[in-house]
Image 1 (cartoon, helix red, strand yellow):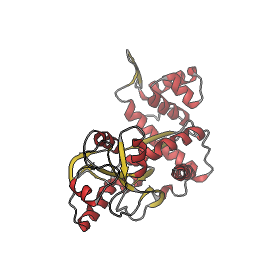
Image 2 (spheres, one colour; image 1 turned 90 degrees about the horizontal axis):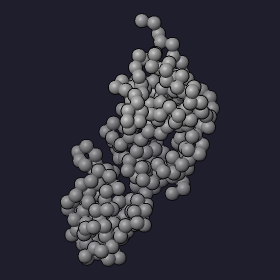
Image 3 (tube, one colour; image 1 turned 135 degrees about the horizontal axis):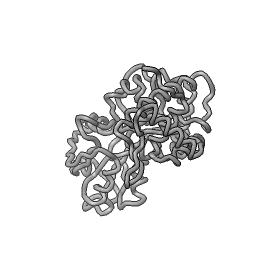
Image 4 (cartoon, helix red, strand yellow; image 1 turned 90 degrees about the vertical axis):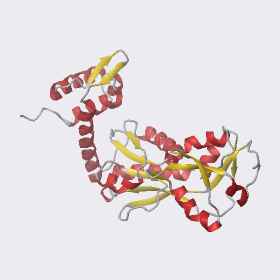
Length: 305
């Protein structure tokens, strides 16, 4: 079977069309005319013998095979883009690369908004994809190019990966402003007597915060009672605001939620070390100019915190 007549520009059109699901927006994404993108779509349909986009009453939708076709194209484009970025300067203003990130809840709440603000200002055509944290697969996902950068609280990081601390975070305790017995301060007995919200869904996901607490509390003679387990930080404050439960969480996250919810942000009644928020990457990306640009933006957000 002869090799299809396809070039890098056509692959980038495919990626833009599948991402935007709209011819005009895809054209704007690549700085093309609408007619030029329509011509590219027609060529793609011929090359792949697939409609790619299908018109429906709710707008353009992907064909049955479009996601698979575009996924293969995106992987090929990323490998080419990263190879070129390794060899020469990275032009953020014109790049249409995709960066695949894996980030914790803290990353999503405290770092990602500032990161996207900077990316949009410097590289308006870049696409950032963020996957949920999978601590057990950090090394694997970085090694096989599924993920370019991992950011968050992670313990027991595999040897051989590059890492840097983005920001140090302090832990605190959070309770409702209307708590029946805790007002303005928290004793060790208060902490021990309370029911708690646990961050994580064991065994699939256990946060570094909970690991730290489970190591520290027995040394203080405390056995914490956890009556709710939640998968994200975002759920916890709303539960706390309406109950007598307590939760231990990063101070910056707690203070941000306390601006809009009736919450008390209280110092812990015992000492815990600060938690480092780390950016982690594989050796294959260490000298890559595009990756170094992205890491620089992440560090800049960390400094702003």
